[in-house]
Length: 86
Ligand SMILES: [Zn+2]
Image (cartoon, rainbow, N blue to C red):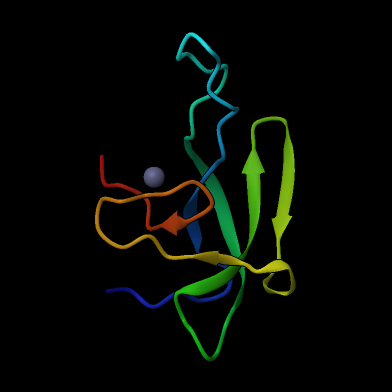
């Protein structure tokens, strides 16, 4: 497993919009480019991120909880992971 470090580019899983009554949703959770801005020294899987959305930046610092590394294939909204190889 690669160790998280400041400046690495990763994926952040965005929160989608709420599911409508008919089961559809305007925006599904999806991978967004993000740059690691901080690494929690006590928990290296928890990082601060600058998320680069197509229409703007979103900052997710450790002081606001940061983001946890998603383990395996379970990639919950609000977590991060190394970019998939394509
Ligand atoms: Zn991804």
